[in-house]
Length: 175
Image (cartoon, rainbow, N blue to C red; front, side):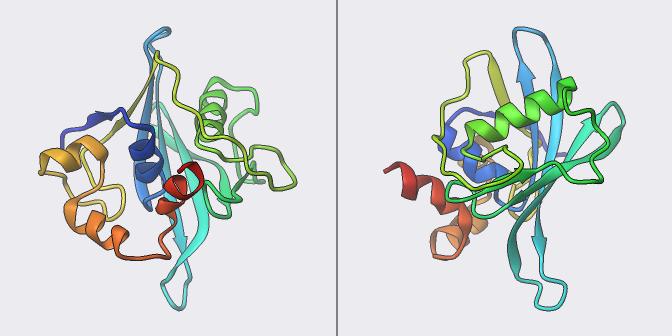
């Protein structure tokens, strides 16, 4: 059985979130709120190649509901779109946490225009957790370093050796 862990490093949070199959739980120590989001990278229906599109679902109790889409390369030119199928209220607690989280990761949350915005550390009272599965392939994590950063060793190697994988973009713009 997979055991989740807190991801503390902002690079690891960014890389995990946009690895392709991430389930992120945001814990607010000040309020006790726990909200879970799934970030799923879209693939071309014919070629099965990954696209620069991420779908976001928010867990509301036992129900997962669509919460928007990110278009573009995170950390480069990505923009969040509310979308017509989003059933959450724009000013709801869930959407407030989600928008603050992705904005911290450098995603433009305006409805139009693309803009590179600064990537900031998470506030100290906000914790980011993964579910114990690789954010790229979804397999159970067993290696201690992988449990710490949310990406398994095989996927980490694949990511490091593939210049087209987007999750390197955080390091590119911040170094």
